[in-house]
Length: 333
Length: 255
Ligand SMILES: Nc1ncnc2c1ncn2[C@@H]1O[C@H](COP(=O)(O)OP(=O)(O)OP(=O)(O)O)[C@@H](O)[C@H]1O
Ligand SMILES: [Mg+2]
View 1 (cartoon, chains in turn red, blue):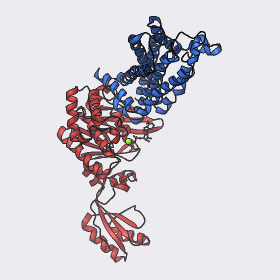
View 2: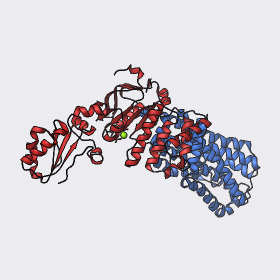
View 3: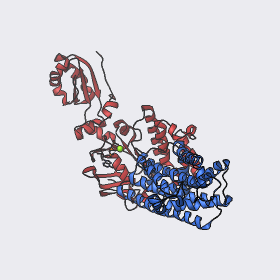
């Protein structure tokens, strides 16, 4: 920690939350700097929401402490509430009210006067692109519109610190990217600190300046996306075999080029020592061994690899949804 | 203060925009009114029955109380829905006064009870209802109806805060119905006997309904009004205390 801890908008020390025998958050030390977009990445059940609920005064820590905006979340809960904006994962938005009504209600709850509340509401509707739908009941909104309204609601009182719990889960790729843009704009314009949880490595990668990866209530890795990925080191070379029977000999042929990585049947992966410049050597090694291949993919390290190295498992959901190779060098047969 | 007003307004808006929750609570008492006033009209001639122009005049106070009882369950079920949906968390995470979460619902219920009483007066006057105490009496009855709606609303909110389930809150409906039925809601106590009479005499709703009824059938009656308002206020005090306790329990349970 470079800065004085009290300077940082979010600081936790040994934060723990138990539910009976379960330790949902098992001793987390964090420090988020002013103006940062901090990504809290983890699979289902990792403890992300529990963490957010403690930091937003909805849940009392079982042990440790947390300061948000310099205020203790337990002893000074009201001061914390005044300085934060929150978009919770499961917080439905009252379907019977219109977007504009909810915004003015939220303004009142934060003690903003009527005219200012209305002005602020209109401004935010514009920002999140909901001006046209402002007079409609929220029950008629799409998932993406609800999330955008949720974001606007969290911003009514111009909080310095913003908590977003899985803001894009369930959104289609376009809406997801649109929401990323809004978060970015907001962060640059208002300088608000953003604490964002996600189970999508791509989201953390794209949006967050710094990331903590949480698994089973513990932080297993922390740093900028680039740092974390560079710790993985070499890119992964993935060979798609014509026949799974060649798997063992393919692995043997590639052994001197890099360490094997577990992969599905019909595929062999290694961490290619020396990176892209060694792809040709790998192809030659396979040819020399007489192995027929369907294709070759070179993939730069991802946060999923970081997670894999730290936990031995893959991020749930991301493997299925986001695992398209980012820098593929595919050669079709 | 504006927070209380805004949350009360939301509670009313909640009610008005959910016809499925309000309409039955309006129609059911009216249906009962129609049924009883046509079926029991002759009973008004029984010896011991109070002097009334019609059974409608006798029973309209019951209709208003019934409407306030049933309509107020919505305060609790809406609160429970807030808890289920997470809107409750949204409120708790904001710096809003904790009491306004509760007071908003209770006030919303009171507004509902007040307006509903006037609606019932409006409809029944089309069928020839004559309220002896006139507009002042109707206003007084509406205010008591508001108090009662607030009280039952608070009780159902307390229940919602305890259980966190809208289903459970709506499950209390038969209980309220029995509570009403085991009183002098549909028959004068003088015409009852046996255990039914004893139970009805123990039921505070009897005194409330009789107090309101006397405004309708005999004219302005301060004693009856005080009894009715007293019962309603008692329920409000008990309900609000229970709800306050349930709220702080819920807030500290997690927190
Ligand atoms: N109120 C609760 N009572 C009991 N256990 C809970 C409670 N809330 C969370 N847990 C448990 O704590 C663990 C962490 O849950 P949490 O909701 O924080 O995970 P998450 O990372 O937000 O997951 P997701 O991505 O699915 O939202 C889980 O094992 C969960 O079952
Ligand atoms: Mg979660």
